[in-house]
Length: 402
Image (tube, rainbow, N blue to C red; front, side, top):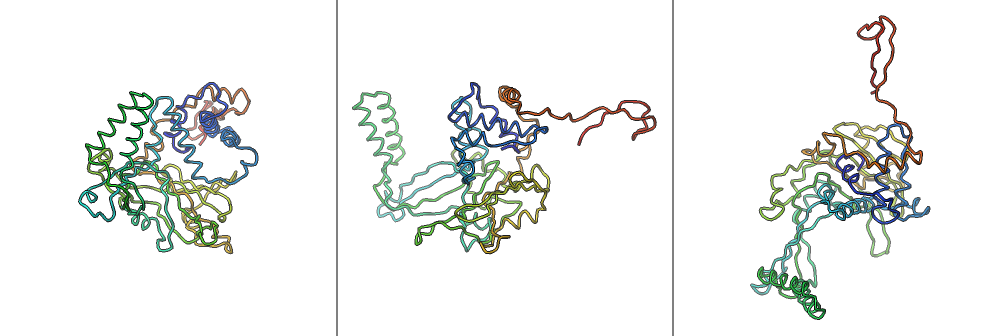
């Protein structure tokens, strides 16, 4: 979130005045405060403890490992809900969420009516889960296997929507809720006119289609699996590779009509910009983050409060996995992969500065004395006669810090 000015601007746009103590606005206020402190080059560091406390965590929770993907989902959903509550568009959904279309059909129809039944449902998902399989060892192959994936659903009531609106109509009549009665009648007519009344309960084949990729694409590599025989979880340590440049076209099914048709010609190239690595097993471990900001080839490793440079080959190789508990050097693997769509470089990093932090956030930090004075980016120096690159004599020259 910090490295994407467009996301920072969305977070700063949420109204958190009035010092909310609890609820979603308190989480966003803590997030605003953390992001602003990170922006200040003169600050010795920015603690995330206040953000953790805004979740309602106690001291024990702050030292307990939590799933980083779930935490990202909670933060994005919280910001989106606050934007919606303020009457603003949930633009954060457009940045991170992946549009999905589910198409249901009766798997083995015995009548023409059953063969004609079809239900289409649009949804979104975050992150995109990749189930690691021993027969698929790379991201491109896994995505190709997910294209138009078909699953069987037993005991599926194809008439559920129609029956549910009929039930709500009866309840609304009994309660005398005329507005609700009108809504139910409208929905029932829509279902009948569309021929989607249903054909009873059957085994349904569900086709999952991904229509287009968001500006920021996040994959979660599902290394934690459940063993039904032992009744316990285990971590998959097999080697799984992924590229720095990804073409998503092999996964997508382009829509020719409907709300997703507008994205049919959208570019599908992505560039790897960050990885969250998990070191450990199914019972716990340690997270390390690798980031390659902007259009640089330089990778940075964030390990708690230690930040270091790493070569790209090292950053990738250690995250492919392939080890075991007996091999500590490879007992680590990527858990989250974050890709940015290459046609959105200006969108990601901002061709103009991001929205400033809310004034009440800055004032509160200054009142608490939590901000150090920010060092100037330039200063004036007096050079002796004959010194300096242009041999300026006795003049003040402006020197700019790198």
